[in-house]
Length: 334
Image (cartoon, rainbow, N blue to C red; front, side, top):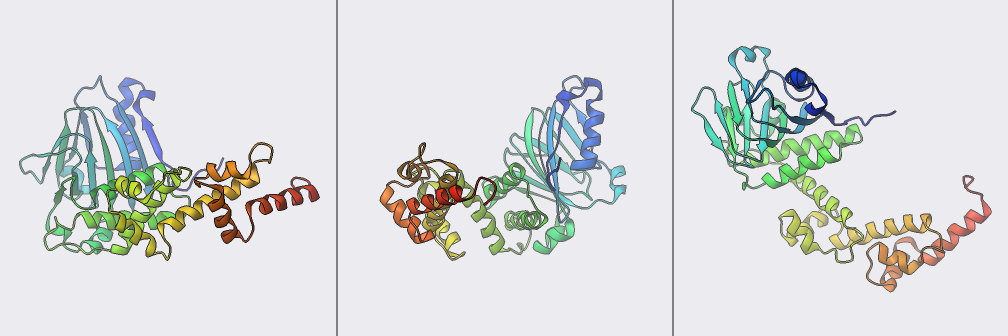
């Protein structure tokens, strides 16, 4: 069986005998998530971890998991491994963190914490919590944020500009792993650029920003939103903008920068879906009118006009041609 080149690796401690769970967890994390940390559960008899991780180009690692109360320690003796990547986490509950021996600080739910692995640090949470974890190559992140080494750690509030986009984009990657090296490389660049974006107000002196890559990441999320609702006749740009947390004008500019419009993109995707249905459905089970409504058009006349303009034929002519070819060539011989 062929596996996807960037498939998620998963672990659930529910599938592991209770006494062996921490050993399996440390092994999984060392191989797929991050090494050089000690994990100490608050209750050895109540360990529950569900974890998934995916390695991408540019030494980027994306992970998501749910942990019972636990402490994570990057102690001085562990720094001998020489790791100096930057790692950031976002958790859905409050936690505490201490960096470089300083007094612990409380991190709010949804806030991002970025830490250099070359620094001793310790974090802990007292309740079951979900988290997003991303590890980034220090050199590649520094290219986008040249002054990032001025501090060993950063705390970015959940409400900071770009935070929702960064979190949504990483979640999109987890749900839809890249199917090729080219796509994975582009996705990794977007994560680096978006991380630099949210660091903009935290790094002393600011960071370099790649606005074109940020726009490309947002456009991909908008297009995914549209495709998930392409058959909805009430699909409007206002609703898409609201779900994405941006203005209507911003969505319009995203499409204009690619030489098209929001309406043209929606219409084009609906017509492509109509082509598939015309090929798959037989005349007895689905009329042209039914297909027009099924792909999101509000009336059959506008569907016919758009179809003819796009494919230089009416839907009826297109279907007749398909039926004619099927009659001439038995299935599988076209």
